[in-house]
Amino acid sequence: MRHFYIIIPVFNRIALTTKCLDSLRAQTDQDFSVIVVDDGSTDGTEDILKTGYPEVIIQKGDGNLWWSGGINKGIRHALTLAGEDDYIITVNNDTLYKPDFIANCRRVTEELPGAMIGSVLADKKGKIYHGGTVINWYTAKYRNVNRMKHIDDFASGHYEPVSVLVGRGMVSPKWVFEKVGLYDEKHLKQGGADADLPRRASLQGVPLYVHYDLVTYDTDDDLQNINKRTRYHLSEIGRYFFDIKSNAHLETRYWFARNTAANPFQGFSFLMFDLARISGHFLTNVRRV
Image (cartoon, rainbow, N blue to C red; front, side, top):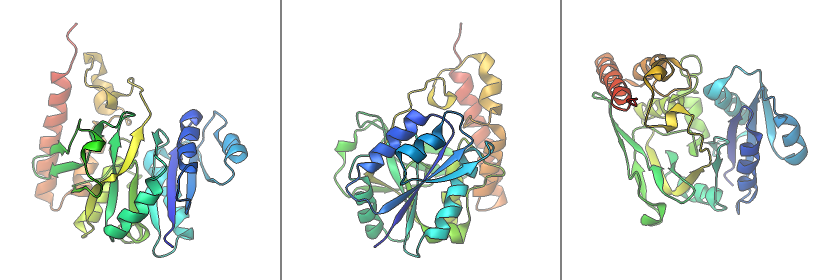
């Protein structure tokens, strides 16, 4: 039977990690393994997991892995354990899953063999804030599919073809990582890093879908996170463009455009439009005080 390997990179925030793990413990389908990559946490994460969650496989980092390095470390370990037909699921620790999530993963991977499949991201009430992203690769125009609708508005079996996938609840065949490679941990360490690999996979013929029977519930309400806000102070311009945790981080935007382009012209065009877009977003949402 197909086995799933769930990769969760963590740095502190043990309360969120245990809630995530508890939701996985409650799954009706238990044919999966969890690999937590603890990147130098200082809040007792390792000891708490060893005592309270002995089923979890722990991989340790030195505090410098960031998101993509942590995910890659977990994937590398999973590849040593996984069979040819097994799947890898990437998860963040600030998410929860209903008890049928793994059972649904099993069903949809049989329905869509050979595809990378993403989850719908929803809030605690089921309102969709990410139903999939469609991108024009020349104009950098993003369209968030079915945003602000409710997950119950969609019949079972509904899925959308998309341009990229995010790392929260992404389900991928093991062989995709062997064929395409891992995340770009050298250039894309944090914000937006998760979308790069699925795009590279799609350029090699791997279909990308978001399936609405797979739902990831976000539990992080930290509005200090610049990626969760729509209003800024002008003094935050440096943080917006140069903080590695910001999705508008300029170096990240450059490497994303370069890595995901089908040709050099497309990459240049995408980058220019993308820089204009994120700059316009910041300037039009600056608080006037």
